[in-house]
Image 1 (tube, rainbow, N blue to C red):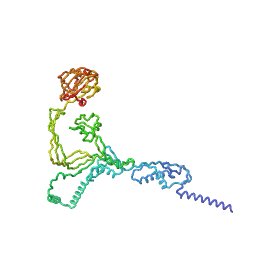
Image 2: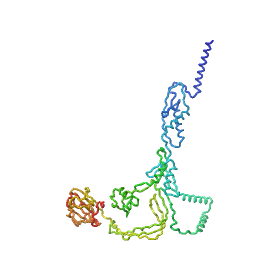
Image 3: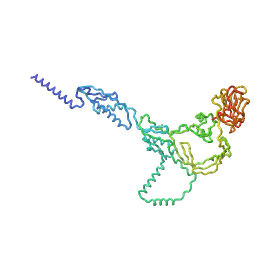
Length: 532
């Protein structure tokens, strides 16, 4: 009896166990039914961190995508992160897997710790070679407005960004508008709208306006001092381009630094073209430069007495911010003024010849003018009205119109062995005040006429040895000393570059060379200042 009971008990236990297993397999989703088909459960790793288990590879990949999307929804910026999904599979009889919510949450935590630098929506502002990367349109407008406010103390002008419709890409440009003009335009538009809505006949409107105008007394002409309107126009002097983009946060510019860049004046090199009447001292003074700085920036200038010609280009330093502002002001002022110089042309004189026929005298006037500025530099003055209290007397200058002859180096090559001016005497009897320049060359080197003219001396002269003197059309004279042989004769006309002698070592000389002089009105000058 007892044996039969035990057997029935065992059978019941086995049946219950089997039913439990079957129920667990079909009704408990956190367990995977064992199938001997290889890996059937996978440990999921993101960036080498364990985040859970899954029964399907595709499920893990979907969870990564959803985790990435959830993080991206938290910001409007472009988010980049490192994602390395790794699955390690194994075959098990029973295994617990993570829910989808758990996997995604764990993945989000890991990805958040591995975020790479965020790509933020930004705006790149380009002005000539300068660029600034700002985080918003508001910052762009603040930077540009700061450049305007530097000169607009009344707050009358505002910056406006607008789409450049001629560009293929999304580019904005900037301009400046007047609040006063905008209000006037708005009032006119409202008046037009009222007239249009009322459907009034044009004749009636114009008639009403005419009656009002006729009723107003003619305003008396203003005194000059009443014309001081101040700032009347502003705009940017450089092209401003603004492009929307995405970039790392570390590449963004500080608004404060950007404002300083576009408003602070910095030394900028520019080209200045020499005009009539210019001197190096005046050029330096006009541009607020020390004469030493002007000479240093232009190595072709030896000293402040170096000759400059009309059309020569010099490098000057001009203080200028990254973003230039153009403005016009209507101003009233009183000033002493000079009349324009009156020139009397003389076709018989060279352009280097001029004589003052009448000395100038300044006048005095009251002026209303529109003055145009680029930053703080006056670029143009247009006089609207003036009241001259004392007339200026003009300077009258007679000047030549003929192009003067040019002078070339009289030899090819050679080493400059002695400069013009004071020196230590090279030998007994030699002058310590050198009246020309010397080029050391082998005996027999060809000597050419530096300029065309008439030979006045060709032969021996004390100290010079064999020498050639040539008188030129501009009244100057050139001398070529220490020759070994003279090839021309007195009274002969020679052209520029014509061979006139051979170099040598004759006269008071320490070695084969050419001594070359240029004399003006009989006075020796430094030849190097006159050679072209």
